[in-house]
Length: 215
Image (tube, rainbow, N blue to C red; front, side):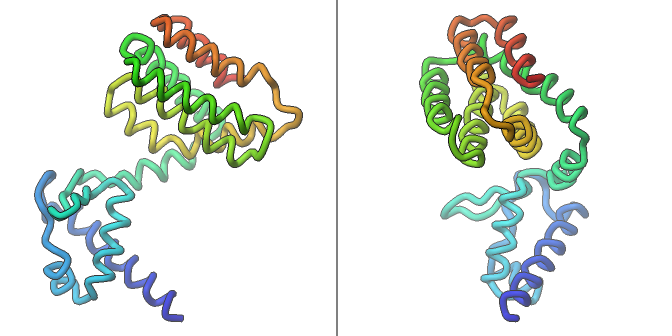
């Protein structure tokens, strides 16, 4: 019972803080009150405030800087975007991936660094080791590879959008890879995309990315 009560108190604290952010209590970039100050203001314990701030940091509203405090990252609650994304259909998810992921990968082919290539090879090798094994493990590794592909475009907005969209990507990969035996062509497309990025060929990278999404 105590765990349920504690969770309820944290949820209430999160709701109160979300409401204050929405009402403009703090400006974007502003340092938030300390945990003791918020605990006193909300009439709750410091531990509850700490847990609530972790939730807000995870959702992207707040940035916690170790030893410095918490800062308001955005007044637009990313939770609403995540909820909207989670309700999209399979076809809507495919269309969005083609627009977001394929175009980002095209940019990655133009902007990638040697460090990006090293990180991508490392992620792909890890995925390869699980391709014919446990599906959940493979999906987790594959998401790391795809996120690094988008990150190689060196556009923080694209990277952040893709992180919100990653749960939909995971569901699509899980669905596509559930049938056995798994198609080697799917993994080969990953290798070919990385080759196109290494060769700085954005047209090939985008074409291969769309082929992978539609496979």
